[in-house]
Length: 112
Length: 110
Image 1 (cartoon, rainbow over the protein chains, first blue to last red):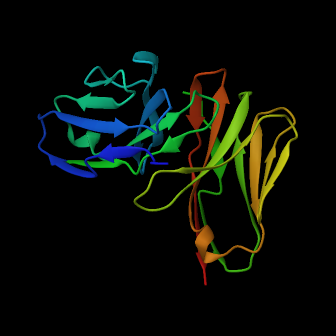
Image 2 (image 1 turned 45 degrees about the vertical axis):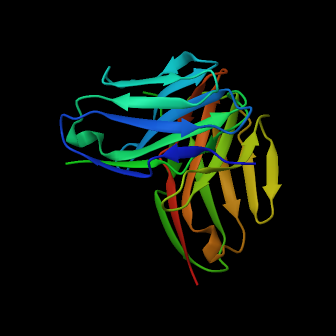
């Protein structure tokens, strides 16, 4: 079966711009989570959606937002980009939390 | 912020050697998972352990969950270059909260 698909794979944006990242989960998976990965901070949890509802949220500023559509596809948006937002953004899907994640390959965001 | 501390942070060994990676916390977890991440890819789930004291084997990899469900270890026997990667533990609290460890970067030299 198809894995978790994240688009785009690479993105370069200028400080102050906004960006939208997309994630298509494995068919049948209703839980989609987003993580930010940096060398210094490791994997940091952004938020988790289940059946279009945000069920859990990490400690990120309001510039980071997300949503989930009825087909379980998810998007995350970062507004007013800062240099420190440069990171690998990972999407992970699951039947439900506790079953383990299937991660996508990530979107590498560089803010210049 | 709750943390899962992994040790060692970095490990470089020769092919054929054995190694153990540790994942420690002061928190109790309902389950714990181990992932391996290769460069340019997302982490891949290796195993989930649920019961305190549980031991699971996956070929040359042995995973153990501590009796108190606060810590875990990953032992690799006769490491191979294909084992190279970033190993991450993730503790699950309740139903919805995952806490990822700080990671152990392993390099196995041929």
